[in-house]
Length: 309
Image (spheres, rainbow, N blue to C red):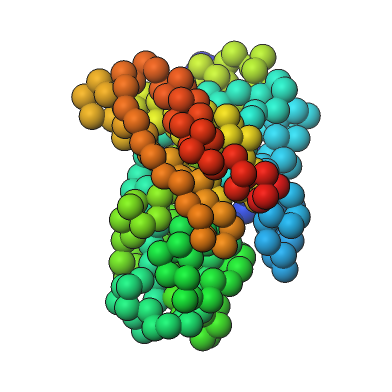
């Protein structure tokens, strides 16, 4: 008689991209742990419901994961799958990040039906993005543009572009690729123009700290390079005490045993922007994040963050 499988439930948002990510994790878990029956628990979060205001106005990116964390707390799910760029740099008590999957393409994507590149946008063109980070960096590069708030899932944002509400929009490359919409990308933005959000293009798995079995299952999927990069980027944001109002960007890469970290802090209007980088041994990832944050604070970035808050 075969042994009964253990059920592992994954809390996920209901957007097509979130479901893709959860199904991807489920498939990897099934392959790594044959004894598991992995099922999805889709739910709608407050971040998905409130679409008429910017995330900064309604409470930040954490709105996308609070309901998922409640499902972990009350036992409806064992793990939650997130886009790491949506996960606040401070984890709530009792929760832990058990794994980060191998990073996809971290760049931002320029999407337009009329213009081939960001540089080709005419004076006064209307550019859509929901991210203060993108808004600040792109306004810094092109103060002549009208940068307008753009909310909704990927399909909704593309529809708003297609109906002429915007001349161009900025989306994450990884999301478009995962949804097989890569053909919509007109230009991949270099990180020198638009540095990614901390954790961008990394899928993370959250568990209860006391749930040793779920943590063990998830850790089998951990990519150590992505985890160290994510650790450095999140330490940078956490030390700056940044939130959804803060135009903060951070991006780490590993070359051999060296981790290279770049960071940006900007004003919301893009007029002021501080950017720097440093490198060191990969095992010092979190420390490098703190050191780079201190570097930018000493250069004057603290005043921008106080103003943004």
